Image (cartoon, rainbow, N blue to C red; front, side):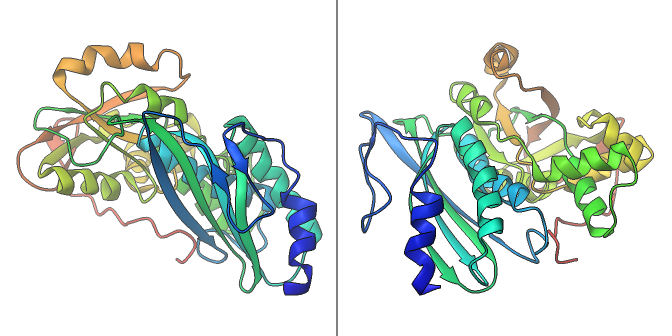
Length: 323
Protein backbone atom coordinates (compact mmCIF):
# COMPACT_ATOMS: atom_id res chain seq x y z
CA UNK A 1 0.00 0.00 0.00
CA UNK A 2 3.05 2.24 0.09
CA UNK A 3 2.25 4.02 -3.15
CA UNK A 4 -1.23 4.98 -1.96
CA UNK A 5 -0.57 5.60 1.72
CA UNK A 6 -0.09 9.36 1.66
CA UNK A 7 -3.01 9.85 -0.70
CA UNK A 8 -5.25 7.87 1.67
CA UNK A 9 -4.01 9.81 4.69
CA UNK A 10 -4.62 13.15 3.01
CA UNK A 11 -8.03 12.16 1.70
CA UNK A 12 -9.54 10.53 4.77
CA UNK A 13 -7.57 11.40 7.87
CA UNK A 14 -6.22 14.95 7.59
CA UNK A 15 -9.72 16.40 7.29
CA UNK A 16 -11.69 15.66 10.44
CA UNK A 17 -14.40 17.34 12.51
CA UNK A 18 -12.38 17.83 15.72
CA UNK A 19 -9.62 20.42 16.04
CA UNK A 20 -8.43 20.79 19.61
CA UNK A 21 -6.54 23.88 20.77
CA UNK A 22 -4.12 21.71 22.79
CA UNK A 23 -2.88 19.95 19.63
CA UNK A 24 0.14 21.99 18.54
CA UNK A 25 1.06 19.69 15.66
CA UNK A 26 -1.17 16.91 14.37
CA UNK A 27 -1.27 14.69 11.30
CA UNK A 28 1.35 15.39 8.65
CA UNK A 29 4.65 15.26 10.54
CA UNK A 30 6.73 12.45 12.05
CA UNK A 31 4.87 12.72 15.35
CA UNK A 32 2.21 14.81 17.05
CA UNK A 33 2.94 17.59 19.54
CA UNK A 34 0.39 18.10 22.30
CA UNK A 35 0.15 20.44 25.29
CA UNK A 36 -1.04 18.53 28.36
CA UNK A 37 -3.03 20.60 30.90
CA UNK A 38 -1.28 21.53 34.15
CA UNK A 39 -1.93 19.45 37.27
CA UNK A 40 -3.16 16.53 35.17
CA UNK A 41 -1.83 13.07 34.49
CA UNK A 42 -1.80 11.48 31.04
CA UNK A 43 -3.85 8.28 30.69
CA UNK A 44 -3.04 6.04 27.69
CA UNK A 45 -4.71 2.89 26.36
CA UNK A 46 -4.33 0.77 23.22
CA UNK A 47 -6.75 -1.77 21.76
CA UNK A 48 -6.58 -3.85 18.59
CA UNK A 49 -9.52 -5.32 16.70
CA UNK A 50 -8.77 -8.10 14.23
CA UNK A 51 -11.11 -9.33 11.50
CA UNK A 52 -12.35 -12.83 12.25
CA UNK A 53 -11.80 -12.42 15.99
CA UNK A 54 -13.39 -9.16 17.05
CA UNK A 55 -15.63 -8.65 14.02
CA UNK A 56 -16.59 -10.51 10.88
CA UNK A 57 -14.64 -9.44 7.77
CA UNK A 58 -17.82 -8.43 5.94
CA UNK A 59 -19.26 -6.41 8.85
CA UNK A 60 -20.43 -2.84 8.27
CA UNK A 61 -17.31 -0.61 8.56
CA UNK A 62 -19.40 2.13 10.20
CA UNK A 63 -20.18 -0.27 13.04
CA UNK A 64 -16.61 -1.57 13.20
CA UNK A 65 -15.26 1.97 13.58
CA UNK A 66 -17.67 2.77 16.41
CA UNK A 67 -16.78 -0.46 18.19
CA UNK A 68 -13.03 0.12 17.81
CA UNK A 69 -13.07 3.63 19.26
CA UNK A 70 -15.69 2.78 21.89
CA UNK A 71 -13.50 0.04 23.36
CA UNK A 72 -10.71 2.57 23.95
CA UNK A 73 -13.06 5.23 25.28
CA UNK A 74 -14.37 2.69 27.75
CA UNK A 75 -10.87 2.00 29.09
CA UNK A 76 -10.38 5.69 29.82
CA UNK A 77 -13.85 5.93 31.34
CA UNK A 78 -12.95 3.19 33.82
CA UNK A 79 -10.00 5.31 34.98
CA UNK A 80 -12.13 8.43 35.39
CA UNK A 81 -10.25 10.14 32.55
CA UNK A 82 -11.38 12.62 29.92
CA UNK A 83 -10.49 11.43 26.37
CA UNK A 84 -8.66 13.90 24.13
CA UNK A 85 -6.32 12.52 21.43
CA UNK A 86 -5.87 9.31 19.49
CA UNK A 87 -3.77 7.63 16.83
CA UNK A 88 -4.96 4.97 14.40
CA UNK A 89 -2.99 2.12 12.83
CA UNK A 90 -5.05 0.60 10.05
CA UNK A 91 -4.08 -2.54 8.14
CA UNK A 92 -6.03 -3.23 4.95
CA UNK A 93 -5.74 -6.11 2.47
CA UNK A 94 -5.95 -3.53 -0.32
CA UNK A 95 -6.93 0.13 -0.77
CA UNK A 96 -10.72 0.11 -0.49
CA UNK A 97 -12.07 3.62 -0.63
CA UNK A 98 -15.79 2.81 -0.07
CA UNK A 99 -14.83 0.79 3.03
CA UNK A 100 -12.53 3.54 4.25
CA UNK A 101 -15.13 6.26 3.70
CA UNK A 102 -17.70 4.31 5.73
CA UNK A 103 -15.13 3.55 8.45
CA UNK A 104 -14.28 7.24 8.76
CA UNK A 105 -17.98 8.07 8.98
CA UNK A 106 -18.41 5.85 12.04
CA UNK A 107 -15.09 6.82 13.58
CA UNK A 108 -15.52 10.57 13.28
CA UNK A 109 -19.09 10.56 14.50
CA UNK A 110 -18.06 9.05 17.83
CA UNK A 111 -14.81 11.05 17.99
CA UNK A 112 -16.70 14.30 17.49
CA UNK A 113 -19.18 13.43 20.24
CA UNK A 114 -16.35 13.03 22.75
CA UNK A 115 -14.11 15.74 21.22
CA UNK A 116 -11.29 13.34 20.41
CA UNK A 117 -8.84 14.50 17.74
CA UNK A 118 -6.98 12.04 15.53
CA UNK A 119 -3.35 13.17 15.74
CA UNK A 120 -1.47 10.43 13.90
CA UNK A 121 -1.19 6.80 12.95
CA UNK A 122 -0.18 4.48 10.14
CA UNK A 123 -1.65 2.57 7.21
CA UNK A 124 -0.21 -0.64 5.84
CA UNK A 125 -1.13 -3.67 3.74
CA UNK A 126 -2.08 -6.95 5.38
CA UNK A 127 -4.97 -8.79 7.09
CA UNK A 128 -7.71 -6.39 8.14
CA UNK A 129 -7.05 -5.01 11.62
CA UNK A 130 -7.52 -1.77 13.55
CA UNK A 131 -5.31 -0.55 16.39
CA UNK A 132 -6.19 2.62 18.27
CA UNK A 133 -4.12 4.35 20.94
CA UNK A 134 -6.25 6.79 22.89
CA UNK A 135 -4.90 9.39 25.29
CA UNK A 136 -6.73 11.43 27.86
CA UNK A 137 -6.19 13.33 31.08
CA UNK A 138 -7.26 12.99 34.68
CA UNK A 139 -6.63 15.40 37.57
CA UNK A 140 -3.37 14.44 39.27
CA UNK A 141 -3.90 11.66 41.81
CA UNK A 142 -7.55 11.09 40.84
CA UNK A 143 -7.26 8.12 38.45
CA UNK A 144 -9.48 5.21 39.54
CA UNK A 145 -7.48 2.01 39.92
CA UNK A 146 -8.23 -1.69 40.32
CA UNK A 147 -6.24 -2.31 43.50
CA UNK A 148 -8.14 -0.31 46.12
CA UNK A 149 -11.34 -2.28 46.78
CA UNK A 150 -11.90 -3.00 50.47
CA UNK A 151 -13.92 -5.56 52.41
CA UNK A 152 -17.42 -4.17 52.87
CA UNK A 153 -17.42 -2.07 49.71
CA UNK A 154 -20.56 -2.33 47.60
CA UNK A 155 -20.37 -3.63 44.05
CA UNK A 156 -22.09 -1.73 41.23
CA UNK A 157 -22.50 -1.82 37.47
CA UNK A 158 -23.74 0.76 34.99
CA UNK A 159 -26.40 0.19 32.35
CA UNK A 160 -27.70 -3.24 31.36
CA UNK A 161 -25.61 -6.38 30.91
CA UNK A 162 -25.89 -9.22 28.42
CA UNK A 163 -27.11 -7.45 25.30
CA UNK A 164 -23.72 -7.61 23.58
CA UNK A 165 -23.45 -11.40 23.89
CA UNK A 166 -27.01 -11.82 22.66
CA UNK A 167 -26.27 -9.53 19.73
CA UNK A 168 -23.17 -11.54 18.89
CA UNK A 169 -25.25 -14.72 18.93
CA UNK A 170 -27.59 -13.13 16.40
CA UNK A 171 -24.61 -12.19 14.20
CA UNK A 172 -23.07 -15.65 14.35
CA UNK A 173 -26.28 -17.26 13.14
CA UNK A 174 -25.41 -15.78 9.77
CA UNK A 175 -28.94 -14.67 8.92
CA UNK A 176 -30.67 -11.32 9.07
CA UNK A 177 -32.34 -10.61 12.45
CA UNK A 178 -35.74 -12.29 12.38
CA UNK A 179 -37.50 -9.73 14.60
CA UNK A 180 -37.10 -6.32 16.18
CA UNK A 181 -35.69 -7.80 19.39
CA UNK A 182 -32.82 -9.47 17.53
CA UNK A 183 -32.17 -6.33 15.49
CA UNK A 184 -31.97 -4.24 18.67
CA UNK A 185 -29.56 -6.67 20.31
CA UNK A 186 -27.36 -6.79 17.19
CA UNK A 187 -27.07 -3.00 17.18
CA UNK A 188 -26.28 -2.94 20.89
CA UNK A 189 -23.38 -5.28 20.24
CA UNK A 190 -21.83 -2.84 17.79
CA UNK A 191 -23.05 0.49 19.18
CA UNK A 192 -22.08 0.32 22.84
CA UNK A 193 -22.07 3.60 24.73
CA UNK A 194 -18.80 4.30 26.58
CA UNK A 195 -19.54 5.58 30.10
CA UNK A 196 -17.16 8.53 29.95
CA UNK A 197 -19.24 10.92 32.08
CA UNK A 198 -20.03 8.16 34.56
CA UNK A 199 -16.34 7.40 34.97
CA UNK A 200 -15.57 11.03 35.74
CA UNK A 201 -18.43 11.08 38.25
CA UNK A 202 -16.82 8.17 40.08
CA UNK A 203 -13.50 9.89 40.82
CA UNK A 204 -14.53 11.00 44.30
CA UNK A 205 -16.65 8.01 45.36
CA UNK A 206 -15.35 4.78 43.82
CA UNK A 207 -12.60 2.74 45.47
CA UNK A 208 -11.94 0.74 42.28
CA UNK A 209 -13.32 0.35 38.78
CA UNK A 210 -12.88 -1.31 35.39
CA UNK A 211 -14.84 -1.70 32.20
CA UNK A 212 -16.58 -4.93 31.24
CA UNK A 213 -14.86 -6.17 28.10
CA UNK A 214 -14.42 -9.89 28.85
CA UNK A 215 -17.54 -10.52 30.95
CA UNK A 216 -18.55 -9.38 34.45
CA UNK A 217 -17.25 -12.44 36.32
CA UNK A 218 -13.97 -12.58 34.39
CA UNK A 219 -13.28 -8.85 34.65
CA UNK A 220 -14.29 -8.53 38.30
CA UNK A 221 -11.59 -11.06 39.16
CA UNK A 222 -8.98 -8.48 38.09
CA UNK A 223 -10.18 -6.12 40.83
CA UNK A 224 -10.37 -8.94 43.37
CA UNK A 225 -6.85 -10.18 42.63
CA UNK A 226 -5.33 -6.70 42.64
CA UNK A 227 -7.11 -5.81 45.91
CA UNK A 228 -6.73 -9.22 47.65
CA UNK A 229 -10.45 -9.59 48.31
CA UNK A 230 -13.43 -11.68 47.13
CA UNK A 231 -16.94 -10.75 46.03
CA UNK A 232 -20.53 -11.94 46.17
CA UNK A 233 -22.73 -11.22 43.15
CA UNK A 234 -26.50 -11.37 43.59
CA UNK A 235 -27.39 -12.59 40.11
CA UNK A 236 -31.11 -11.90 40.56
CA UNK A 237 -30.31 -8.17 40.85
CA UNK A 238 -28.32 -7.92 37.61
CA UNK A 239 -29.73 -5.24 35.30
CA UNK A 240 -30.98 -6.81 32.06
CA UNK A 241 -33.01 -5.36 29.22
CA UNK A 242 -36.49 -6.47 28.17
CA UNK A 243 -34.96 -7.54 24.86
CA UNK A 244 -32.48 -9.85 26.58
CA UNK A 245 -35.24 -11.34 28.72
CA UNK A 246 -37.27 -12.09 25.60
CA UNK A 247 -34.22 -13.47 23.77
CA UNK A 248 -33.06 -15.67 26.67
CA UNK A 249 -36.53 -16.89 27.59
CA UNK A 250 -36.28 -16.46 31.35
CA UNK A 251 -34.69 -14.66 34.29
CA UNK A 252 -32.00 -17.22 35.11
CA UNK A 253 -30.99 -17.64 31.48
CA UNK A 254 -30.73 -13.86 31.09
CA UNK A 255 -28.66 -13.61 34.28
CA UNK A 256 -26.18 -16.22 33.02
CA UNK A 257 -25.69 -14.24 29.83
CA UNK A 258 -25.30 -11.03 31.84
CA UNK A 259 -22.57 -12.61 33.98
CA UNK A 260 -20.42 -13.60 31.00
CA UNK A 261 -21.24 -11.15 28.20
CA UNK A 262 -18.16 -9.29 26.99
CA UNK A 263 -17.63 -6.11 24.99
CA UNK A 264 -20.37 -4.48 27.04
CA UNK A 265 -18.23 -1.44 27.87
CA UNK A 266 -20.27 -0.85 30.99
CA UNK A 267 -18.42 -0.01 34.19
CA UNK A 268 -18.06 -2.29 37.20
CA UNK A 269 -17.00 -0.42 40.33
CA UNK A 270 -16.84 -0.59 44.11
CA UNK A 271 -18.02 2.04 46.57
CA UNK A 272 -17.25 2.26 50.31
CA UNK A 273 -20.21 2.31 52.70
CA UNK A 274 -19.33 5.91 53.56
CA UNK A 275 -19.91 6.97 49.93
CA UNK A 276 -22.89 4.78 49.10
CA UNK A 277 -25.37 7.59 49.67
CA UNK A 278 -23.53 9.75 47.13
CA UNK A 279 -23.89 7.35 44.19
CA UNK A 280 -27.26 8.56 42.92
CA UNK A 281 -26.25 12.22 43.20
CA UNK A 282 -22.96 11.57 41.39
CA UNK A 283 -24.80 9.94 38.49
CA UNK A 284 -27.67 12.43 38.29
CA UNK A 285 -26.13 14.38 35.37
CA UNK A 286 -24.78 11.38 33.45
CA UNK A 287 -28.02 9.88 32.12
CA UNK A 288 -26.65 6.48 33.18
CA UNK A 289 -28.48 3.85 35.19
CA UNK A 290 -26.53 2.24 38.02
CA UNK A 291 -27.31 -0.92 40.01
CA UNK A 292 -25.86 -2.41 43.20
CA UNK A 293 -25.28 -6.12 42.50
CA UNK A 294 -23.24 -7.38 45.45
CA UNK A 295 -20.51 -6.73 47.98
CA UNK A 296 -16.78 -7.18 48.55
CA UNK A 297 -15.82 -9.83 51.13
CA UNK A 298 -12.74 -11.47 52.68
CA UNK A 299 -11.18 -14.36 50.78
CA UNK A 300 -10.68 -15.08 47.10
CA UNK A 301 -12.79 -15.42 43.98
CA UNK A 302 -16.41 -14.74 43.08
CA UNK A 303 -19.48 -16.32 44.63
CA UNK A 304 -22.67 -16.10 42.57
CA UNK A 305 -25.98 -16.16 44.45
CA UNK A 306 -29.53 -16.50 43.19
CA UNK A 307 -32.23 -15.28 45.57
CA UNK A 308 -29.81 -15.44 48.49
CA UNK A 309 -28.43 -18.93 47.85
CA UNK A 310 -25.08 -19.82 46.22
CA UNK A 311 -25.37 -21.42 42.78
CA UNK A 312 -22.88 -23.49 40.84
CA UNK A 313 -23.57 -22.30 37.32
CA UNK A 314 -21.27 -23.26 34.49
CA UNK A 315 -20.26 -19.86 33.15
CA UNK A 316 -18.25 -19.99 29.93
CA UNK A 317 -16.02 -17.04 29.19
CA UNK A 318 -16.32 -14.46 26.42
CA UNK A 319 -14.67 -15.58 23.20
CA UNK A 320 -15.42 -12.90 20.57
CA UNK A 321 -15.98 -14.44 17.11
CA UNK A 322 -13.52 -17.31 17.46
CA UNK A 323 -16.13 -19.81 18.61
